[in-house]
Image 1 (tube, rainbow over the protein chains, first blue to last red):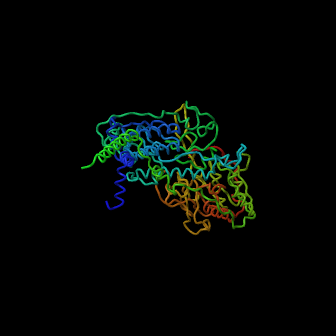
Image 2 (image 1 turned 90 degrees about the vertical axis):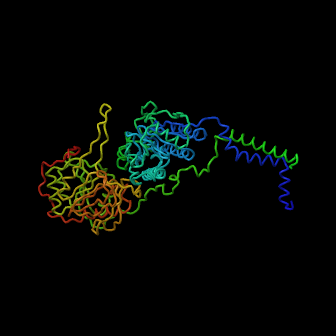
Length: 309
Length: 324
């Protein structure tokens, strides 16, 4: 005990306060994680989450909340997304992607596609470890659609030149559309670039693929139904003894409500579908097909938009 | 042999350790630890190159040829869907340089026959058309260009009319036929079907394609690169500008496609938006349009009143779409 530091350590270890602090630290950081499995008596669970609605802000909010709950539930070992959606709002689809991306960082996520996982719904599914499709499933359609603002003189009284044109010039609108497309295409290439056999440019063309062709092009991984997806999720989670729980966080809504109409499907104004409460505004959609009022595929063009404006 | 104090301290330590471990397992288990904020974002969302920037407009539309006394007639009698206001820069530049710009509206709209309008013209401009040209009009146009009259034909890709619903059942869509085929075929040129697109991402929109000169002709003097918004290929005759590495929508074949071609006194452009105020000042578009204006007023027409005998029955059929 000639070393003064050793002497101080011995002295410190004779203090109950120091012992308590050291024990608390070790207990909370080392023992607690191991004890979790012992304390918890819940069996392994596979969660199946339905995403079978047009993706809107409210629907995404509900689903994101559900996914967070499942992510933080240690008894849930894997999540299966049962997707049958044409996509929807661009911003809501991006939120869905981020939520699934976050979930997939912590536990296996598998997607089972029903009728389609197109556009924004494919955005949602793309972080999945595996995507299961059936021959009639449609996946892909990576793109954004919208209506460019007009550039004529507004009949309303406004405080600025862009106040009457949805806050942006037509060039800025196209730049925004392009930025969203790049983020979407970039996400697909980041998540599935090692599996997709077509070029980035082809992905950006917004092609949609059916079951077998989707697997060939790498937009999906396996042909199989929901049972195959659940089995795949269990295998990915390394569990063979599990129960399956089903969740349907968001109820289907009509496209009209996404585009500004009322929930019963009736558009609220003559300017629908690209208005809300009678107000002309920019709506960016990541949706399968071309809603009425938008006469272009994936990205609208100046001339066609001009005709509508 | 540890003394009693040491033993008590060891028991105390283990006790606290167990309590802390169990408490942590019960209260902190499901919550997990929060990752750093920058770990939550998607990589593709954070890349600087993800953000697209709107293009800048630059340049002035000028022409070098003397247009004094020249008469330029713009065809408004065959249902061209372009707004006259959109042509303001072109018309203004022509008139500022001494030319007279007239619009041919056709007999249906109270005007004269096309051949009568051509007889007074030095140059004729067609910006798309929705109704067909009669045989007499085609003959008159041919006589006009053979006499040295200059003809500029600009056209957009054909638009698909939106699908209509009959009793709730979609009936599909149909294309509006282009009446310009017979006009250009007289000069060995044609517009291909479909539109050109690229995913090069340098033009902000997939249907905006860049084109470069294929040679050193008058039409491309001072032009390095133009950007055409919604272009269709022009085939035949002498190609002046072509778009490289672009894809034709109908065949999905990637390659080089001519977008501006010339056959003597006739020039065909596979786009009309290049001349409009909105897109005129992108890249070298204004230089190309300036060259086209020079082309229009540089003809030597002889006889001056060609076509000589306007056909009395050659009234146009404005607003009437006809089958191809």
